[in-house]
Structure formats: C-alpha cells, structure tokens
Image 1 (tube, rainbow, N blue to C red):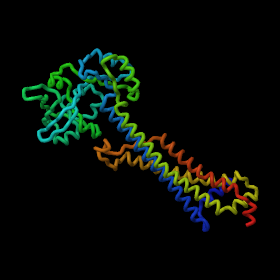
Image 2 (cartoon, rainbow, N blue to C red):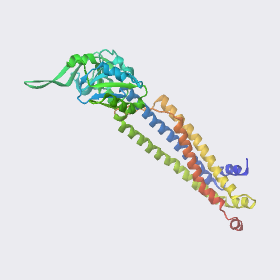
Image 3 (tube, helix red, strand yellow):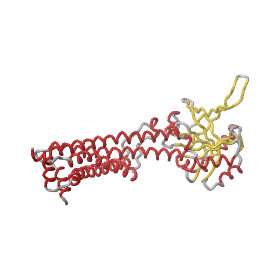
Length: 393
C-alpha cells in the first residue's frame, strides 16, 4: 500500500480531533446505501409491473386484431388460412365479441361476451378453471353477481328486434361452467367466454364474426406485422395490435419509472454532497499535514489522489452494501409477496419484482461516479494549499 492509499484509509477512521468528520463520512456511506438499495428495489418493482402486465395482456388478448369497417363479416376459413400461412404467425382463431348485460336474478353488471373456440385459443386456456365447453365468467364478475359454477346466468345483448311495444333486446340463459381468472381486475370483472357455436345459435348470426384474432411467435413484432398484414388484406379490413391499444398505459408506466429513478437518485446526490462537505472539512482539518507532505516532495497529484481515494473507498463500500441490501429486499419481496395491493387500483394484487443485472449495474456505476465527482472539488482545494503560508502560521 503506497502512502496515498494509507492516508486515505487513515483519514476515514476517527480520532479525538476529527470525530465529526468521520461521523459525516459514515452518514455519507449510509446515504449511499439507502439510495442504492431504494433504487434497486423500486426499479425492480417497476420492471416487474411492466413484465407482469405485458405477460397478462399478451396472454388474455390476441397480439393482432383484424376487423372489418362494416362491423360483422362472414367467417372465411380461406382468409384465416391465408393469414396463418405467414411465418410470423403462431395461430389464428375467429372471435365474435359484443358488449352485454349479465344478470343473476339478484344482481346485474355490464360485461363483454366473447364467442370463441376456447380450446383453440392457446394461452387463454391457462387462465380458465372448469369446463371449457360452456360459459366461462370472470372471477371478480362472479363475486359481483353472487354466483358460482353451475349457476344460471341471464345474458342480454344490445341487439334484437322491434316490436309494437318498442325495441326488445335479445336475451337468453346459460349455465356457468368455468371461471376465468387472469389476475387483472379489469379483465376479471368484464370478460365472459362462450363457445362461438352457442353464440351463433342464440343470436341467429351463424357464420358471422367481427374479429380475426392472431397470436404471433414474437409478440413484440406486432406493430411491424400489423402494417404488413393491413397491406396484404387490402380494402375493407383494418388491423390493430396490443402494443398500439395499450401504448398510453405503458408510456405512463415508463414515465413513472423514469420519474422515480430521478427522485431516488437525488438521495444519492444528497449523500454525494455530504461527501463533498465532509472532505472539504477534512482538508481544512488536515491542511498542515498536506503542507508537510508537499514540503517532503509530495506532488499536487499525490494530494488529490489521497482525497479521491478516500471517496473511492466510501463510494465502493456504500454501493456494495447498497447492492446487497437492495437485492436481498427484492428477493424477499419476490419470494414471499408480503405486500398486498388493492386489485381495483393496480390491476394485480401482489407486488411483482424483476431483479435485472443490467439496471443494477447502471445504478451502481451511476452512484459510484457521483461519489467520485463529489470528491474532485475538495481534492483540488487540498492540492492548491500554499505550503509557505501554512508552515509560517
């Protein structure tokens, strides 16, 4: 260990004359630990929210929707086979979806009825418990209606016929055979699934659909595929995708994540300023030592290095412990899920955590660089000591 490193370590330790300076260094380390740990946990939670919501949205909804400007159109198997022939496509299924009112006799609620072949809907099946051949109702909607499986459900559709007494909406009763539970409150209070053949028979719309649902091998290429498919289908059809439909939601999440990063980075910045002030006080305390060192031949660079190395030690220890605390808290939060969220506000009822090495590295490097930058001013001030004036006094 050269004399620069020796003095850097020595100045961190406390002695009778500069206990306050040493205490200030300790508070700086604690500030860095808290800032780094908080950033890691918060970024982990925000990334977890992004990933969990994306996974649920992509699991419940198709990645690409093909609709017709006329609304309902004929179920064309050749058209579906043509779309399915694209190498980017995983599978395709027809969908007849409409808003409705559902009633259990005692309670009523608005809902969205999806006429679908559930057995061919891929990822959607893993959110359903019970018989797939009957009507499947969202778990939260079942609570609102006060029903369970095998209960009778009255479904009222917004279309019907005009009678001498006015408009008579189409209504029919079905038996609930399954429960749909995605973990997203909005979906679980809204969606009803029924075999498309049953919906055709009940509504006298045999062979009619209003959506061609497409699931891609890579859902993140949905935007590019939508443009390609829209050009391929030509007039009459329009194409949308899950990225565009949820763009505002995910943009808001990204903005919130950035804002939280900046706010929590201020904690580290405050700790860095504390390091600047403690090193500045240390320079004032050790000004005679610095003058003696320079008188014995130490260069300005040597003096700067002493105080920069002290900041390096403080920053390294703070960042290292902060990383450990942040990762440990994130792991515990992910494994035990001891914090519950209101489902109607946050879509999901537990805090998801995604521990990612990339953002931990970025946080650690950023915090460490802030500490180093904070040491440059007091280090420069120490190297500019006038040894003649100091030794004369």
